[in-house]
Image 1 (tube, helix red, strand yellow):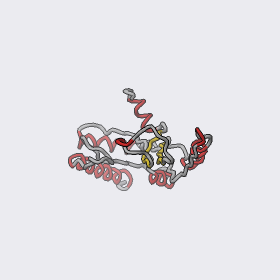
Image 2 (image 1 turned 120 degrees about the horizontal axis):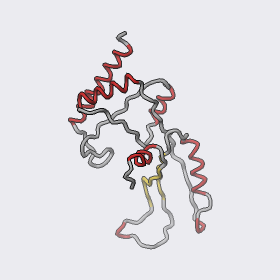
Image 3 (image 1 turned 135 degrees about the vertical axis):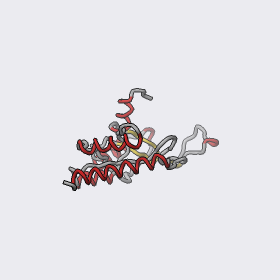
Image 4 (image 1 turned 180 degrees about the vertical axis):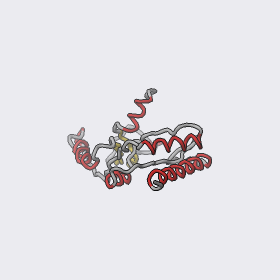
Length: 180
């Protein structure tokens, strides 16, 4: 694993990744052995850079997986869904200032911006429909929380701070666009 923050960020946001998210047909570890199985099914998840059209990649992946499998094996690939990622536009200066001001007020430090390697197809649709819109996408993780894990929980103090930040950003939005 890299210790270079830039490499870690690139791996999480801009570089493709392949994950096995489901398996059927493998024996339990206690019964595992060096044997041939009649069938194994995998569910794969491929994360793509946010500017790559996911629907165009599906047929390429299908062709690569099905073409010339070893030892006469039969490989079939069914693309179940494809969601293109989203690249956030640059923040307007008023919004960036508002975010940092709110973060400093409630967390005593500037906001931290990060990209996430997963896709949020809904954001892609909104970005396409409203290309000049500004978005603040946030969530609450907080200390020792594990998003989407068995020990996922809501850190109350963190949630209150984020809620207050968002409320301040909404007020700044009103003041910037409506109170002129």
